[in-house]
Image (cartoon, rainbow over all chains, first blue to last red; front, side, top):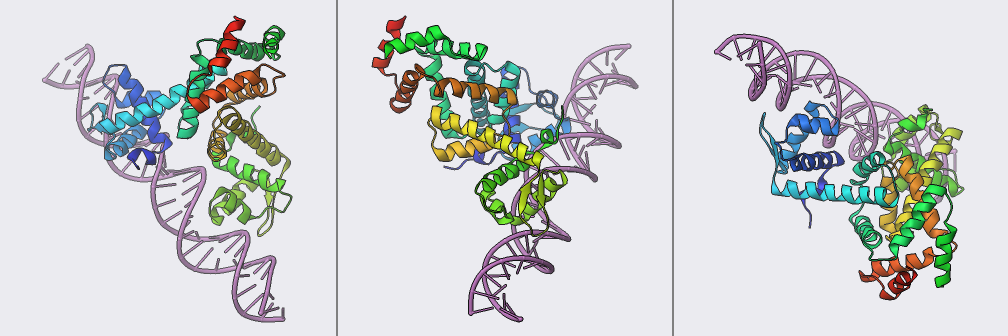
Length: 162
Length: 162
DNA sequence: TATAATAGTTAGCTATGACTAACATTTTAA
DNA sequence: TTAAAATGTTAGTCATAGCTAACTATTATA
């Protein structure tokens, strides 16, 4: 099944994602808001909105507020979901700072395959929602990040099991 | 410290990386080889090589073979290293198939920050080179990937420890 | 309510990086 | 050794997506 979303450029995905985030704030979404969020000039926004309107992903009339069509909302949320998954991996597993995590997620969200993203999601489920066991393992990982070597105490515990 | 590499586009990085891989095969690198590897037409290669020559990253005379300058070699290997690290994470941790892993690594290698890549490298060190302990954890992860639920036997082992 | 400030648009420019068509060179083989 | 095949280049086109400058519309306020 082929949909509009398959043809979207990274740039267009960025615009949709920005509109999701701005919409979530509850106020009408303006060209200026998007311009600020994406750090591009206003004419770039106008031009992007024109394309997205033509693709039936957003509604935008001259000098008016910006809103989604159903399809646009769906795609926007999809992109944002990818962003959050990647950011979660970067911050909660790799302990990357918020700044880098957001920047990187923002760029990787456009290029990671569905396949890899599904695996990553499962990975996070496994590691972060584990009833028990993974907590211990995560501690070991954190120690390794902090000190550059393994925590011998944790290791002994592991080895005794075998 | 600012170097040429900081200004390279994704496209130029791709060309350098391709030249690394082709050079590793031991035969002279031709425009056609690069064209095939990157799946672009030959005029695109010629034009890219012109830019890379001007930036002093490759040596290429009309109708001649392609080779690196020292700087070009350094950057090319750096990009390729990023690729391998990402691919390793995708295949060995997430169990993504080779095809998707390579495609994704190829695209993510240009956008991941130094910071995140360093963390990812450490993460792989921790998980894959662990003298003991992580092997058990990886088994649990694999089980979860395969069956969509946790292996109770492994869980019990973990919980006993606490 | 007139006017200044803010917001948004249009037109036109730039760079990147692909492409095709046509041409030039090099290599292979008859 | 010369003609065909393979390889490589040049010139020119296209799409994306940013930008500035100049203009128009909206809004806020004096």
